[in-house]
Length: 102
Image 1 (cartoon, rainbow, N blue to C red):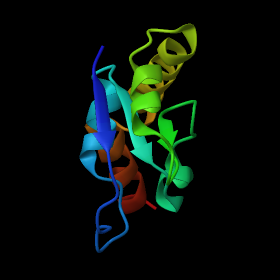
Image 2 (cartoon, helix red, strand yellow):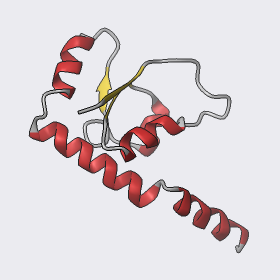
Image 3 (cartoon, rainbow, N blue to C red):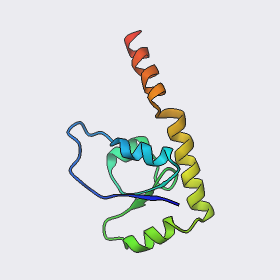
Image 4 (tube, rainbow, N blue to C red):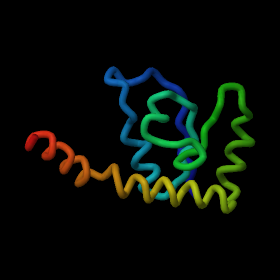
């Protein structure tokens, strides 16, 4: 099992989610990240990723992510299916074309 840890960094100037989040989920790895409002616009905590609250014990969260529990496997599967259904380059291309055809 692979855990991708995302810690707070200065936000993008456009307030976007970096491609690494999508790539992590598409590779069937678990995404452990600090909470942010922009994430909540696209993903659901404990459905698509494991949230890390400020002040939480990071080692406990990492152990949970590596536990291979049913809950972790459900998060991985949910994230993978969600990203593959709604956040591929093909899907983005379709959305852009739809905008241009309006």
